[in-house]
Image 1 (cartoon, helix red, strand yellow):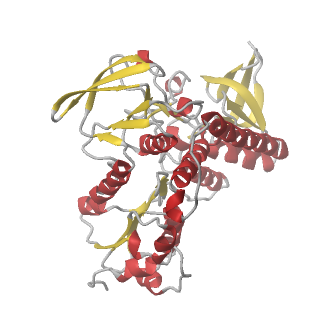
Image 2: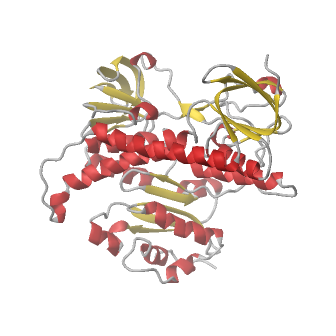
Image 3: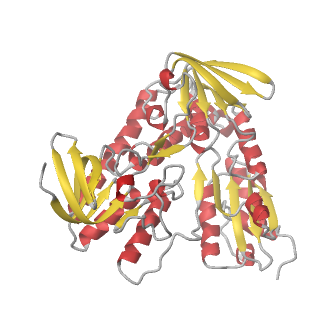
Length: 465
């Protein structure tokens, strides 16, 4: 058994919050190690956020080229080379990994490639990827374990060798017929992208509508957009069995409100939620409590139930977005300085779904406000009313805002071109505590998408303070 090496801090997992914390602590002069099994920099730059958006952009280019005639541009036959799409994505990932390696070198944080297991209080044993074992003892331990794609216990599904987001981003071919299990963010982004690459696509969702965390009008608009691109949507459908092999031929037997349905395809993609990577690492033996869903139980300062151990990001139950993991880092950083009172309570959680046009939301939805008994005034504006869309022919979607009786903005949703950028304007106003009238009366450049905020907030019903 190797002798324990002493560190001020050890971080298990090199995802967003963990790596920034490690770099920060190392730059303050502490001896810090980060243990990573495979993905240098975490899942976002390797297998999730950035790679998926890279390939989605390629799919968007394919869509634009296919519609070039509508813009007065003549083109020849359009075809998609998935090997080149994949190569473009891989090149980006390689650059991002190199960036991370440079940051480790510059900050002095040590990156150890291997699999970690907690073997004693604040002591971690690492099975190194290149062979051998190391034992690290730390004064502070940070768990940045992440999540993985869930595979539902459907008979035959596991044996079919389904794609997850990882494998879908490594395809070097266009599937003949891609069957997507799940009508949430990941499933819909891939569904539209592969439809644009040329696949026939069927989405199977057990719920009655897509993107069920959103208001019904948002779900309806997403459905309309996808169906206009001939993505087949099967809602209120329970998958009972899967037969065959993904990549060759698969059959999905589903139960719908109308009875049985069999869908035959070439490939199957599972996008049915995430599972935290908390099993098999030795957490329970140290008194680190888990929730009933397997996430690490933390307080609003991200402290676990064991002393001097914190959890960061998705494994701690934080919203599953890279930017929220980054804020977890800020919470821990500020509180470690002493006297800090930074908390995860009542954080604003902005997010985007990168279908085309994208969806963006900050704050409450109508359904959430109603469930909490919050009195709100609702304003909506179709995107075709924003003059910028007339120049781009991108007029699908709408904006929606929720305003309380004191004229404060409680929520904003947009499905439309450049939704994420427009949302940031509203989020800034919300953070500053500005009344909605500030955006209604603001001088916003013409013609831009953000200019639509003038009209949107001009539609707020009267009745405020």
